[in-house]
Length: 384
Image (tube, rainbow, N blue to C red):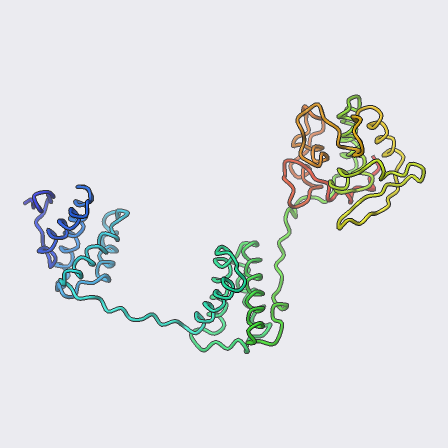
């Protein structure tokens, strides 16, 4: 027997249960709020099913609550697939019944904050208001500190003065196996930050931040630190020195191999940095420090060949000449080993490199599709 609600919604079964007398008014309320016909139908259907389930459970109208609505959805999920808004619809139905005095207001017990949660909230306020850290940082730090305090103190009183280095070490040891290396590093960083905060507040006197163990997270550990000398020879031999670009490339590579300089050190070499008479090269390294290095004969010859036959007349940078191809990444010594050096239009190289060799001389923050020269120092002694 079909049932028609408000001359608008047609159900295949009649209304049953303690809510049957209020479903029509609930549907009218949804209609007054501007809901579409299908949305109203979904509300009426779910309310009717909920009421029928309450009737089978012999639930009285005055005892209907949000907890019963949640139990109904759990039971319904075992038979049919729940729609996305089912939980929200039942929440609206419960609110509607309470608003009209059909069911009593639910007594909500005040949430009791545990002692360790109070400490966590104080630490979070410190990070947000005093240190002005971003919300993303708080989202990473706070869960670790909450777990640490809950693990150490449980529901008892929090006495930070009772913390010791062994507490931090054991907690890290228990957590590390379950975490990704990057998350593990975040854990140790969060613990150090909390211990610094506790010491700042005077709750602890020892520097427990120093007791937090470090987490090893070396990147690209499988990549060799240097390529074999025979591959260095092949690489140098593959460069066509009959072109200006080839002479420039050969000079850069030879400087890298012989002297093991960084990419920035090669890119910023000036003519004034070379003392031809003394046979030495002045290199500006990190922090502006200058280092005098011997200038090997073959390196000097390669530089001279490029200066005389290839470099545009444009002082004073040695390797800043224009290329017939589009501009490379600066500094230009990044161009040397574009992936798969096989017959590239830049180098016409015939050397086959594997993925590991492509980055074996790269720094950890280098883009893997081009090699930087951080670790060329380890092959500086190779004699091709």
